[in-house]
Image (cartoon, rainbow, N blue to C red; front, side, top):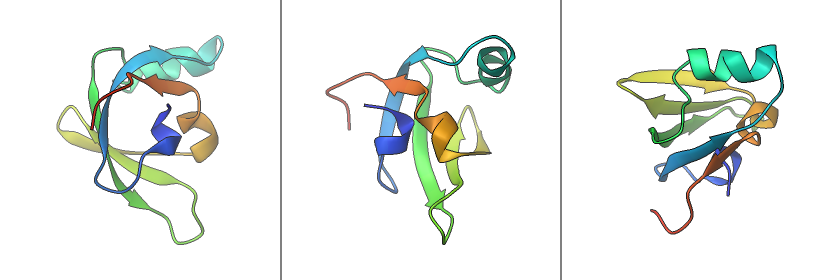
Length: 76
């Protein structure tokens, strides 16, 4: 399961962060690190991008990027 699979209002805990090189470092710099709880807040009218809430702030990312961030299974 990835952030991309969440429905509005659903939450999950990041297990792994994918991507390579600068992309992965950018994810980590934005606070998308393993163990962080994320909640899907909004989806744009055309379906991309999505807005997530983590660490007390909102972050907007593309769905393609959201597919790179895996969540732990068995959580709400």
